[in-house]
Image (cartoon, rainbow, N blue to C red; front, side, top):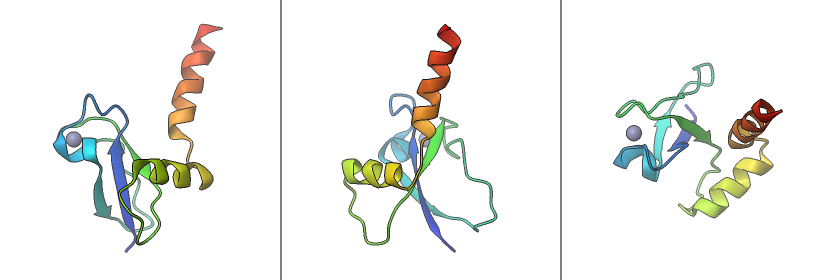
Length: 83
Ligand SMILES: [Zn+2]
């Protein structure tokens, strides 16, 4: 089973667990989590390569390269509402 890393979208709202990011194993067919199972804060899935360190910059850089644009989409949506 693949190991996924989740992190709070807004670290100010998350609990200790999702603020720092947490790992969970899921089947490839399982829907991805959108809320922290502990506090219910919005979370997003970070693409993580095996053996990667806990560097946030590196995680986000890799997530972008893997085409993970959840945060960008949120920002774009907010923009679109302004027009
Ligand atoms: Zn949480």
